[in-house]
Length: 191
Image (cartoon, rainbow, N blue to C red; front, side):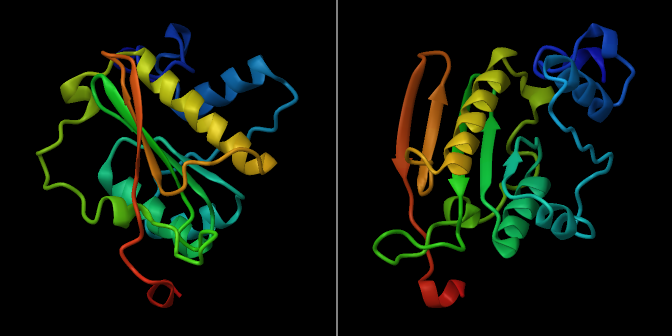
């Protein structure tokens, strides 16, 4: 953990500077609720380990900060038939969606996947990283809390998860908007 991350990674504190993020986050969760079982994975997600890791969980939550990981995780979750709760942030904005492209909606149409929303990553260098653009510190907490609510809805089978809908958060105007998006393929193509 480094000092530059503290303002946007709220699970860590100045006492954890120099620690690995995975250890710091696990310790923080245990302090908050010692009855929670924390399982850590001190590794970089890659094509060689993603499928085995994703297959061990019922729901995957993505808060990664790079496009390579985002696309890999979305593809693997689709292949492993695991719901993916995906959020992204910019300097003052964020987005959130739930991906279940291996399922169909009530009308029998395939649910959209990540590549239906974002067919390809943007060209390198066209989107600044969090470190380059800066991020308002509370924004990851807002999007993380919204992700947690989506997970609760999926686990409990309640409400309407953001499947086929993208929640857009503009923190400067404190405006929340939702747009719908669809699968670009047919059910036969996705089978």
